[in-house]
Image (tube, rainbow, N blue to C red; front, side, top):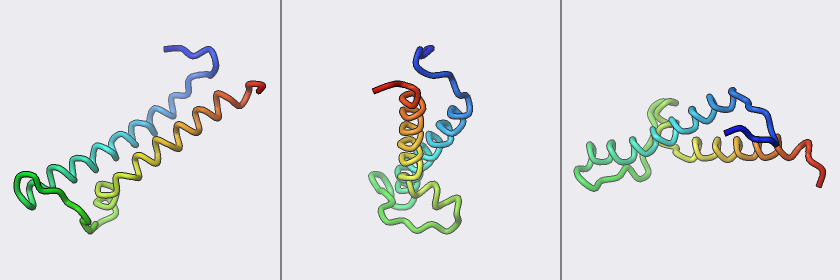
Length: 84
């Protein structure tokens, strides 16, 4: 879809993919890791990270926060040139 308000920035797609992967890692870690550790229906509530990569998988708000920052950037980029 081509927007008449803004130009396409392909670098944002890479950051958006990173945010999606972070959210997917957190959901996978919470559901699959919980079931492996505690059986069916188990969730990893209050899990501790052993490594920095594990911290990215456990802390799901990192990917969500990245999506919010990207949304703000895109809206600001679109509205920057418009007259209110």
